[in-house]
Image (cartoon, rainbow, N blue to C red; front, side, top):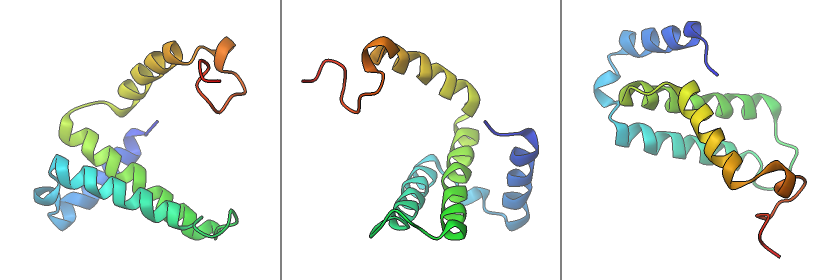
Length: 106
């Protein structure tokens, strides 16, 4: 998911600004949600959002998620892969394929 180059650049960015002291798990979780809201705001009134603005807001979401993963000492790639296993069991492809509702919903 994230390259070591990105992780290192993010660590350096935070270090240069002495921002790590503000990066509590709660603050980072709140910030990721706020940034997700700002991304959603790009599409508030129509589906044709400004691509540069979407890219900027989209970049903020994984940035805060990566910082939170670092703070919690979890590997983003590993937790995503583990969650995919759980979700695959919950939504078997042969029963959920092409549906927007849960396979056992009418």
